[in-house]
Image (cartoon, rainbow, N blue to C red):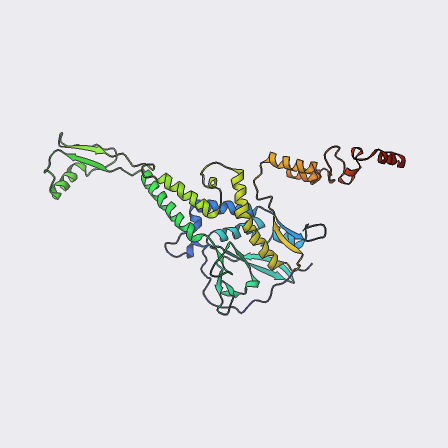
Length: 396
């Protein structure tokens, strides 16, 4: 089956717009730090990206018996090898999510390439930007080349309220918290540095002996200037009293409380559970809530863009496996499968698949009681009247 082609590329432009590639630290403006440089920001983005990128991308088709999965060349291309020789679906999808949540600021672009009527690659476009068209709509620029919106896959995280065609991310909000966390980390490193020394209080027995700045400096030079670590100070008895201040701890400065608050804010911005950043303990319910409210909406945006731009048939659509996103412990998953199998909703081999066991030829849908085939469930003797039982016996 030949895959649909895109339209011809628009006239190329040599404009420098869109040439700033934020993925390369060598080309970043002075003083700019990527969001991924923050451990907390990176942890949130990596968690969302790794979970979504691990989910299978299904090609589905509407049928009279319901939607069924299609396994053809296009399905394998998108789910297994969307960028041949460069990236598998896992790394390809991971890049898209990282762009949406990170320096892409809510937008990620992929260029479909084709040959002889078939797609050959879905190439990521790092640094591509969407720009408003004065005549209406918008266009995409990448490496000095202009593309029409229907020539590229344009994934969006949220919608920009002023430019509905444009994606909107969380970079500005996250950058503020990242800067605050970086400041806290620098202060922590300063207090924990091996050469850090707490300040000293020098008590002098005379009220006016060191009223003159020159006298004070002369005393410091004579008695206190040699500050090599571990070397004692020697000065006349009863001349002065030295008290050492205790080093200020992170608790004294409330750094831990501020850091925890910043971490909780980061988790809220990205919609991940707080235990992702070490706050609290793991909770299935919190993870699954994040799946419903954050992960699945991201998946739906990707599904719809793939369906709109890659499929010609109105009966087909792409779908990212929801079951791969939710958190199930092994026992709960098997118990759920067994319960569905007892009601004839799953076959034995489907249960064995989730248990990571080889198929055993258990392909029939069976019901609890005598585990009979589903089509024979209405012929159980306890459900038949006496005359019906006699007729069946006569027929035999």
